[in-house]
Image 1 (cartoon, rainbow, N blue to C red):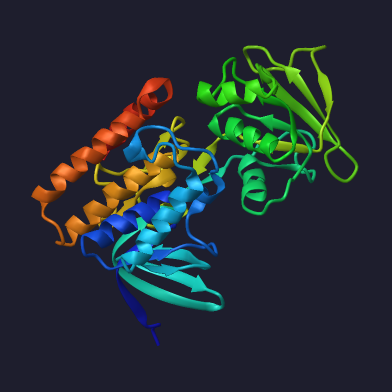
Image 2 (tube, rainbow, N blue to C red):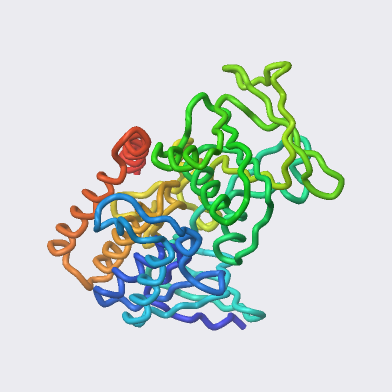
Length: 364
């Protein structure tokens, strides 16, 4: 006997900044929204982000990430969004069928529209000793410090000088750790200079054109060897330095968590700038699979502010596709969001992402 299907109008997979923003916009315009998140609390990365956001007031400038998370959760509650926590979407099939599991119970959901806002995962880095306890992703360290109030190490080597590496280094110092060095393979700093300046003022060296050679220890990390590298990223002899450290944090990029998009047979595009393979989508954030949308890092790794704007865009587009709002009314809203996205993607880092997004739209 076929398992009974539960019918939903809009299902959003992932309760981070993109998913919450989409849920709010879709619900505001009359759609009945169900938000699914595998964690015990929605909000995603926002509750790990204790720093103030940049940009303008519309981008929540000056507000800390966890406060933004609280605002979004309160708004979803007031709009009557159904939130399923501790729930995993284990499959997506033809005609918008979703397989979900909550506790020990599996169910099949039939949705009119689906938005995948599953975020991204941290990239690993292989080196001698990388499996020792005390080697972890920077995001894992940030979770331990900012959510669980546990300091994972006292003497830290951070690998990677992108925004994640710089921000987490700063937060580890605030939590009482000593960051011995930020090690960066490229000849220049990868993140925003405002973050780099803050960590340099705290006395943390940023070693560009350097790499980690090995981590050593009996039961966990006790010391780390780093080295200068040449333009071919090969270690330069006699430049090794041995540092006594008990924690190595890896901040070497993120990759879109797009397994559900692969399962749904979406067409993909590879972009090293946006994190790797990501589903093709148009300016409404709809994929090549009809009625399936994406938003946030799964559609290309950027910042939380960008994820929220893409979520809003997807939420409005979904409401429009269901007939809750006319194309005429959505045109102005969409244009405003596109303008805000364009503003977020300015500068030496953002412009390349804007060009990549335009490529994706053209290929759709």
